[in-house]
Image (cartoon, rainbow, N blue to C red; front, side, top):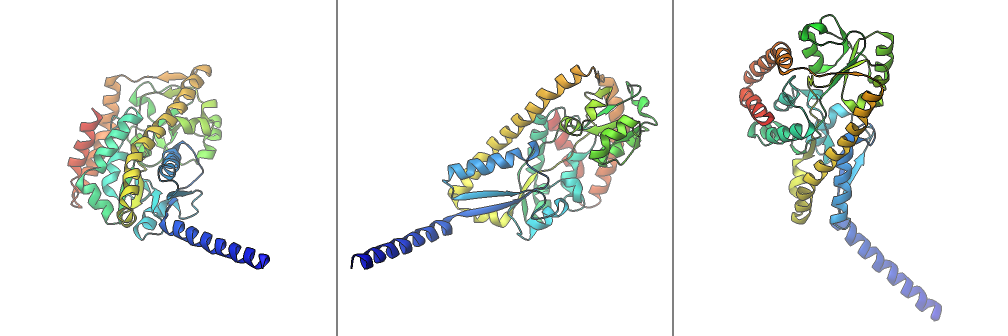
Length: 338
């Protein structure tokens, strides 16, 4: 009898436990996030968001990061969001400029953005524009927060390019819009992978490599360079964190409130993380006696006139022809850079 009673009690406890476990599971919300590469400064705001959202909801709202393109290829993240393959993702506007043309205004060269705080401010302003929201709504997507990337600058060998004309004929590892901008001042954009950049610079295959500071450290181009364009700031990439609109709308009110309140904290954490990169960067330049080229306002105006304005005008003409308020978006960016 005692054995049977113990068995009955244990069985009842098991059933009860399964009941509560099922109830807890049913009440949870899990979002999957498609990211590429591995955990790094570029993903720290998503990591922070996941940690704090789980903490603030006692684990009821889980945000799971899937690295290495496990859920989707980087260039297909917007598509995955559109049909709900996952709830959140990072994407870069230049990966599919035809699918998110309004966001490409933030990838135009020589916009005058000098720091990540300004990049963040400008990004938020653009995300809030009705044309941008309409653009992303076609893909059932909304921007959750920016991933502000530092301006690319060039580390190089040989004679330092102190004036715009000194780039004429220089082979530079510069891709996308930055490569196009450098081409307008006479440079020769060269497609070299990030992992090959150090060897290309060290051997003289290229005379310059355009990276953000953290990449110059990671790929060791700083070890080969002799000069650095400290404030050329030719451009960067725009890679926001986006969410599926239906998933966002389905969030319980309390979880939506936690998510919205935690986003600004996550962005601040991201900026603090990148600040630590710069804490390493400037001493590294000094220790290696790398010449830091500081262009005057007149020099930068010359770059902008030759490598910026013509590309802006072309972008405005092309996007306006598609019915996009392109000049309005460019003016919005410029007004927030000041």
